[in-house]
Length: 272
Image 1 (cartoon, rainbow, N blue to C red):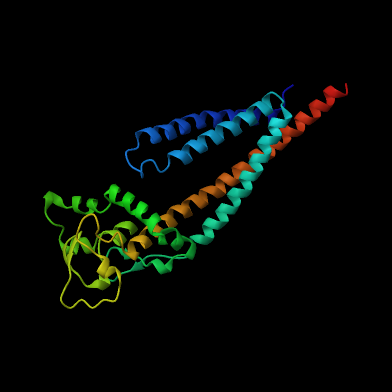
Image 2 (tube, rainbow, N blue to C red; image 1 turned 90 degrees about the vertical axis):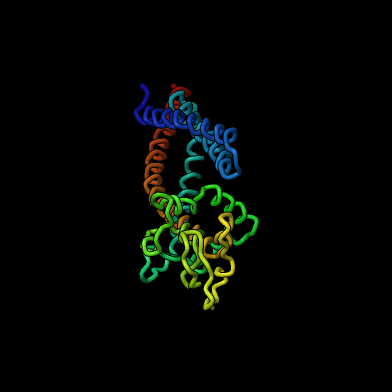
């Protein structure tokens, strides 16, 4: 009689196998339909994830339902390594994202961001000019700054008071406008003029350009805004990882029971 733990492992892995198919198809679609480097950025990781899930789920499915002990052993080994890696990544994510936050600006609905406030590891991800040029290209393609202009009604410029009260995203605040410390004069959300009394020492003030392809994409505040966005996303992922980790441990425990059942059945067949 097939035991309950083997059935449960088989069902869970069959579901995982079904889920791996659309993931794999999605990765192939991204690699063929992506028109820019940004759109094709995730194709290889998605394809790799789909193949990984398919192989591991097949090993668990066949190992549990067909009583192939060595396949189930391989499945449990991969699961154990996955649990260890996920645990380490979750701890790392909490540590890395523990530092850094936006600075509240008086009389403004948005916050401003400074690169030095974030962890050194995150800063190193954007310090390379080669890496940043790729990231900057993706930000430009996303038209994140153009959306500030499109929000204006009837195509009229957004009034300065309305703009100052807006709750901008971290990337919009860091990349689409100059820092308030620069003292620039507002013309439109992405058009600012330097005043004659501007004496700010912030290097981002000199990096600002009204060209819609430049703006503040070369500013330290833009990198800080991106890191704040990453930090927020990583914290959410870390919380989900804790839940997923508990689920993996439960599945791993059930898999161990199925593995023990296989060995007992093999021993019984060998010594009737």
